[in-house]
Structures are given as structure tokens and as C-alpha cells.
Length: 230
Image (cartoon, rainbow, N blue to C red; front, top):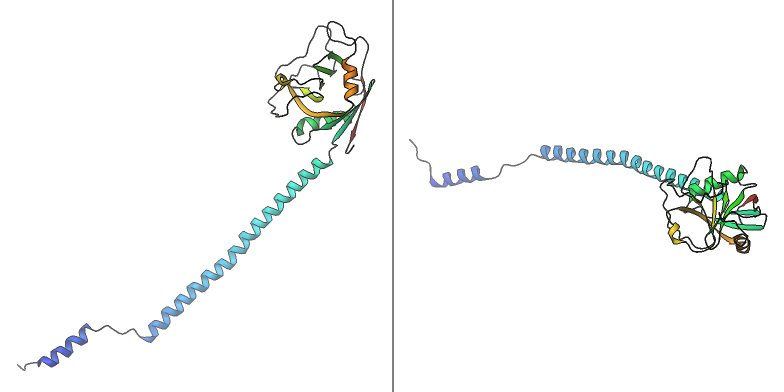
């Protein structure tokens, strides 16, 4: 048996341990595959991103349109009401922002002529003057719960509101405070304030009343005029 020379064994060992070469065709194949994957990802991104962006922009446009519509409706509502009474005129600024539902109801009733000929049937000095459906002698203001209404408006003098209490056939009564009355915060829904005609309110407050706080001589609302500006 022929002996292998040590130098030949060393060269043979180096050939076994050396790294195997990668062919050029394999490198080209994987390079093309990587380029294809990147291209597909780019195409997918370009397809879906504009859609999501369009949807978000479309939603923003719709939201802005709805807000503009709501704001335009609010701005179209009358901001003031003039109560023409048998003692003179009382100008009221309406709180469209803080009491929108009550203001809407008040405006609707004004347009239907609900307050025309309505009497001030209770006049309590240093408290309130009340106009509405006459509740009869001996019957004071009913404060039963009408519903959940939250208001942060403090009841100063010359504020106008309506009762949270509701009685059968009572309707929408008007209360104008003639003094600060903080204990009415959970009983009155304030929806405006008197900005002109405070002297008329005070004149009504000073009329003679009977023991039931009813005026001895009739005082009534002749009509109500709605205005955008004063």
C-alpha cells in the first residue's frame, strides 16, 4: 500500500476546511427576489395609504360640515326677545348656548303666540314676578321635579327662567327674579336675562297684591317680539 506524503495530506485538509463558493447565478436569483419583495411592499403601501388618507380626510370634511350646520342653525336663532307688557317693554337676552332646549321651546311658543295676553298672576316683592296660567287663589308656585336640567347660571336679579315643576295644563310659565335668589338653582331653568326694562320689572314688582300675591289689577304680556340683534 502506497504511503501518502505529509505535504499532500496538508493540502487535502485545507481543501476540505475551506468555504464553499456561492455561484453567481444564486446571488443574482436572491437579489432579484429581494427586489421583487420590496417592489410588492411599495405597491401595497401606495394602494392602501391613499385610501386611508382619503377616508380620514372625508370624515374630517363631514365632521366640519356637521359642526358648521349646527353653528349656523344656532346663529340663525333669535338672540333676543322683547316682552311688551301693559307696563312697558322688557328686553331679554336669550342664553342659546347654555340652555338651548329651553330657548328652542320658548322661541317656538313665541311664534305660536302662546304668551299673548298672559297675565302676571303672582308678584312677590324681592323675589319673583310670575306670568303664566293662573293657578287660582291660595295656590303658590309648584316646585315638583320636571326633569334633570343642569345649569351653572347663578340666579341674580333680573334673570328670566321657567319652572322645573310641571303641573297639568300649567304650560310654560315665565319667572323674572327681582333679587338674587341662590336657593332656586334647582327649581328654575334660567334661559335669559333682562338687559333693558329693569324699571318695568320693578314697576310690576311694586303693584298692590292680595294675601295670595295676586295683583289687584291685571297686568299682562301683550305680545313677544323675537329679534336677532338689539
